[in-house]
Amino acid sequence: MLELLLPLQRLFKPVLILLLLWSSYRTIFMRDRAVGLVLYLALVIIVDSFLNTGIFIPGMEYGSIRYSEVCALFLILYNPPKRYSKRDNRLFFKLLFLYFFLYLVAAFRGITIEDGLNNFRRYIIPQITALWVAYRGFDKDEDYGRFLFYFMTLLILIALFTFWDVFFDRWIMFSEGLNTQTYSSGRKNGRFGSFFLNPNYMGAFAVLVFPVIFIRTLLERNIIKTVFCWTGVLALTFAFVETQSRGPMLSLLVAMSFFIFMPTKGYSFIKKTAFLIVLVFVIYLFMPGFFEHAIERFSTIESEMAMDKKSRNTVWEYTIEVIRNNPLLGVGLGEITYFKRMIQAGFREEMMARPLDNPHNSYLEIAVTAGIPALILFISFNAVLIRKGISKILALSESAKDNSLYLMGFIAGLLGFLACLFPDMYLFTQNVAPAYWIIFGLTYSIAIKAEGPEEA
Image (cartoon, rainbow, N blue to C red):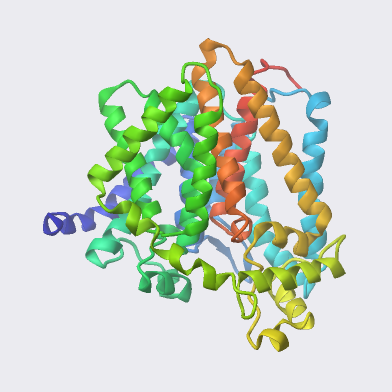
């Protein structure tokens, strides 16, 4: 069977080019935001991050234009009209503005202003762009379902990369990033990150999107489309299992617990539990032994939390000490800045080891980079959005059942992702962080759209 599939590798790039041309046509000329948003995410993950390429400007490597930003320009130009009241949402947008403004301040407080601004351009600008692209959602309610349907294509492409790597020991597409330690160390241990390179990034992305694509699959009524959707769900599950990422796997339990216990119209607790049991059965049928393979790395978790050597616990302990010394504005943006502050805190002398470049905890990284106020802002606007979303789920009528379920899926993904942030630095990545802000923006768009259109 594998020998029959291997020759298909030569078709991957032509198919990818055709998909790119078709989606670009739909985005630019047909103003199809559902397709355009999938194209934007694909460009962020595959082109900007994996291939690490863009429209380079001579002498301005870090200031070069990303291909996803070209796509974002068209999406912003075709944004639907505002559907929120400035009075009711002024506080929400103020929290967001202050949060990103504190990162700009942190950029000027880096090891050098140039390094700080380069990091701001690399990590923060893509997040702002993603939020800007997504927060107004779509013109029509059915476009949320169309977006999630086309999104399955990206998930299948991601899984195909992992499939070829696992079973054929080949790369379906080459990038210089495949030769880095980030990818090779995980691959050596039987962990695969697909286009994300880092298996943990792939795991966090899967947690973020799994609940809502599962819901989208359940809502599909067309037989052919249902098969395609289930292919997307199984593809994502396969890629997720091959990451063996402990934090995301535990976080998925948080997301799916919300999915089960959150009251929704048309889907009772028993019905949702039954669907999950069916999903697990299907996964066992197509991927026997997946559970044992997924949890292999949990046996090493105790050694990574040790207090007498370089571990997550000791890194967190010293990071908290650095935060205590710089509580209001943090130490500044950039890995070099953090690295030097950890040395000054005595980590190298005490642990007899080189400090890490980041604290491997997104909440601590927010606080150490931009200060405790930035962390409070991040928690606050997420709490406001989740509260608003839950209230809308409960308030939506039976006629808006699909949007209610999509909103539940988006919130479940956000809750799972927020749990993921504890053991790693997903908010400071070029591929996962923009995906989070896309889901954040779409969640907001459904929550306020349920109130009925209202011009600002």
